[in-house]
Length: 79
Image (cartoon, rainbow, N blue to C red; front, side, top):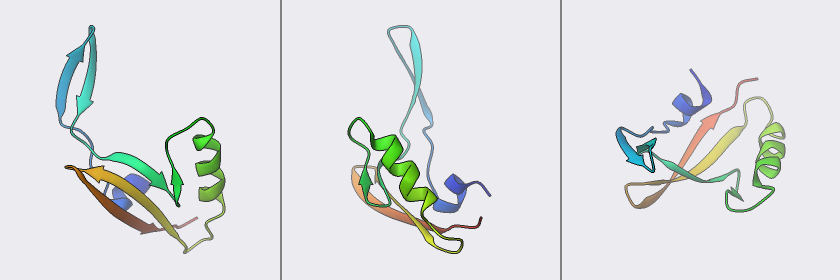
């Protein structure tokens, strides 16, 4: 399984065209990973460091926006 499958992340299902570009809508929107909010410049580096610090057998925790509600997901890390 991929990490996304293990977490139970849901992808989008609806195609929409905006300014001649196609986007997929309707899936989970990731809000935070390991408590690091995805909101500003530098978030990628902070998330990467937080993920790298999870030991084998530790928990990966992700908060998503799903159907208007915040949902916390977690999965065991296998390295």
